Image (cartoon, rainbow, N blue to C red; front, side):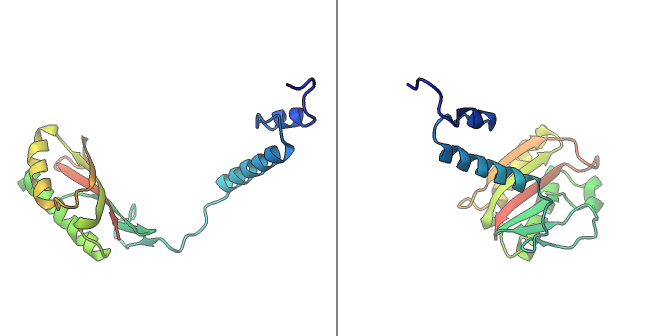
Length: 166
């Protein structure tokens, strides 16, 4: 097509843009690349529009709200009743905590967008799912995942993490 390369071809190739034509287009792409790279390496800024609910737990906040979304940390059943509760009781206890936390954040289970569920043993899946189906609003079902996982304490059989709309 050309008998010799355009005057800016070697410069453009050095920039890694792969654009042999149009100095203006190559320059604009390079500027966008440099701006994105600079933004990615900046130190995080304090964000005043994030609301973190207080907790006695030094590791996490039970509720974080940002951009109209409510994030609940992993919720587990009543730790004082682990020895006397099965998956059904633990699921109900935990979902009652979820209802309470959502209400504190100004939302409800009808506004849940996604749920990530961990159960200690998949043999309990059907019993847990029965409780879940009774709890969840059939008109407002969230996206959901459920996996088997070891728990932080041996007696915990169920844990859930929720993202909801405000």
